Amino acid sequence: MRKKVLVRDVREVLEKIERVKQNGDEWITDFYMDENEVARWISEGQVSLSDTDAALFLYRDRGTHLQLYWGFSSLASMASQMREELASAEKKIITDFLSHGEDSAERKALLACGFKSYMTFTRISKLNPHPEKKDIDPKWFARPEDLQGVADILAETMDPDCEQIPDEGELRKAIAEHRILVIHDPESDELAAMTMFDRRGAWLHWRFWGSRAKYRQKKLGLQLYEPYIELNGDARRHVGWVRDNNPMREVYHYFGFRPDGLKDEVFHYVPGQGMA
Image (tube, rainbow, N blue to C red):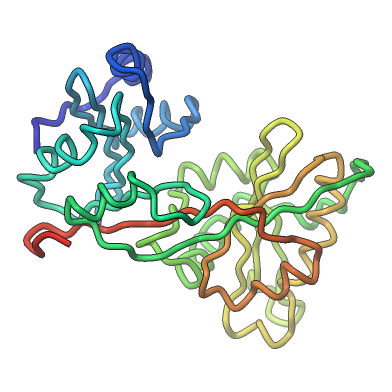
C-alpha cells in the first residue's frame, strides 16, 4: 500500500479527483461524493488518501475496517494500480461497485486483486405521480434522547460489513433535521423501531428501516411507513437498497417498490488471505 496521508480539507480530495480525471480519457469510480458529509468525516480525522497520476484511493476509518473509495483514469490500469495499493494492507478493506448485474471488467479487476464478493444489494424504487407533502404529528420525529435507541436498533438489524451504518455525528444531524422517524412501544415506552432517509432534490433515499426483534410480532415498524410517505409526499421518486437476503423484500413490494435494474456489490479484502 502506498503511503496514506491524512486529509485535512475536502478541497484536497476534489483537487486530486480532477487531476486523475485530466490524466486519462475515462473516470472509473465507486465514489459519488457528498461534499458536506466527507467534510464532516475529515473534521473527525477519519479520512486519508493515497494517489498516483492515474488513480485515487480514499479511505474512511470505521474502526474495525477501512471503507475504500476509488477512482481511475483508465480501466486498463485499474487492476495493476489496485494490486499495488493493496500490497501492504494491514486492515480489512471494504469497497463496493455499482452495476446492472453484469460481470463487468471492473468487477473482474477487483476479484483479480484479491477482493471477495460479500453481499449484493438491489436498488428498488417507486415513482410518485402526484407529489404532495403533508404535515405529520411531531410525535413521529426522533428526539435527541432517542439517539442511543436508534443506534441500538441499527446495530441489531444492520450488517456493518456491508451497510455503511451512520456514526453518532451523522445520527445527531439526521435527528436535528427530522430525517429519522421513530415509534415507541406503547406499554414500555421503549424505542421499538426507526426509519431514516435522505433527500436529494426530487429524489428521496430511504436508507434504513429497522425494528427491535422483540417488537416485530407487534408490527410497530410498519406503522412508520404512512408518516414517512406523508412527510415526503412531494418527492417524485423514492429509492432504497435492500440486501438480496433481506426477508423484508416482500414488504417493500407490497408498498409498490420495484427493482429498477441497478445493483451494488460489496467486496471484502482481508490481508493475508491470498488472491481470489
